[in-house]
Image (cartoon, rainbow, N blue to C red; front, side):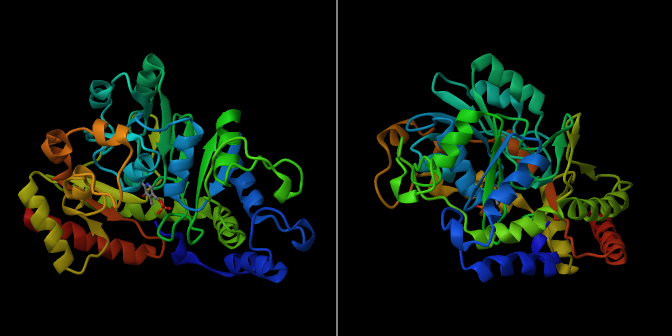
Length: 397
Ligand SMILES: *Cc1c(COP(=O)(O)O)cnc(C)c1O
């Protein structure tokens, strides 16, 4: 996945443009910038590539989720449905606004189970947030139908799935808003950065203002701009945007490498009895950032993960026991441990997580191993790796 593996002159030259002018900020200083508007240029390119009317760059993927929620008017006490398998940023963004993260089960897509989502809807539900973990998506048509029936907003977290698609649309462009991360380990990187995309004018305008202290960005005197509503600082710098500008031109090249390496591994594992693969919903195309597969039992999966490590096969993840990505290790969320008092609506509205169980999620995650697909692996190296993995897995079955 990581774009940093293939850094080069394109990235260096883009950054040099910014350093030469000395204007590191995305807004203002028109006369000094030698015509360089890296953030604006990247927003335009991203919008075109993602077939969306608007893109707003921000400082991280977590910021993108926060700004997306805020732009859609989400605030204290509103419920946002998220999967039990995700990254901590999902609930951090929701909590930052005083809203309530409502976790639900995943299914064999390793993302939201539409029937679990339907059961979790209350009068306070405002948003369904599918997270396209490890490069693939939920049944988005089913989720959209639930949104339509209940007048809910869909915000896609496509941070791990940039370049994938569903029903012919780029992931992120299917819902009302879509979010990307350009942190250091994502398929394309800015070092740190993120973006949201949308076709909704109001959400876009809100995101543009909210991510820069509520500035209305009218005229060319920043000091004279007014603030129609409260905002925050989630700005990206020109230096970061410059790196992203070089990387977005390489997205399709990176995706092709991921697909090649993924396919080599998949072909090696496919014939093994006892190995089955994560379900990709009809109409979905992965971005091939990971290959995720199921083994027959939790015990076998645990042992296989350990055996792969012992054989020196790195970059294979057993999320079930991972601190960042699965609800089992999120005691800080489950017990709402914050530095200061949280919004009253949140303290009163948070589901009873210490008592909650996600048995269906455990059923899938306990048997899942995900292998990161690196860009730096050459074809021969990948084939050797795939052979070693296949042999190691077979020994455990
Ligand atoms: C990386 C990631 C984020 C957060 O992005 P940052 O840029 O690191 O803040 C959010 N969601 C998912 C699924 C991610 O993988």
